[in-house]
Image 1 (cartoon, rainbow, N blue to C red):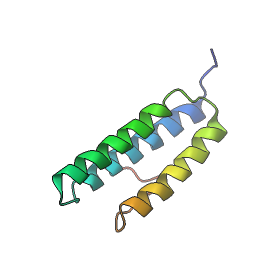
Image 2: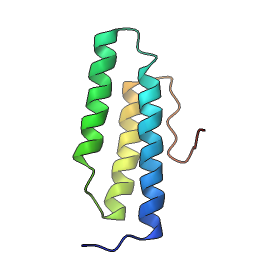
Image 3: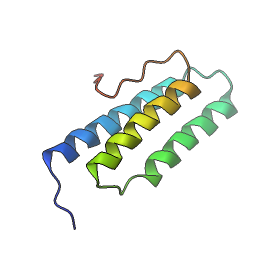
Length: 85
């Protein structure tokens, strides 16, 4: 098993924040079925990548995920470093 570093914990928090932002952004989709499908797609993508431990791969997937969400949900601000409370 790979030893987790501080960078792993920071990246984990960034991923969690991105997931929360994406879930909130789905609320703006007017069609109920489309909203459910979009949230399901987001959940599946995050679950599929759950067990990746290489920090370079995580950072790459995080950047890719932000780009995909921006394209899929235009008008929403997806920044990986923002923290909302």
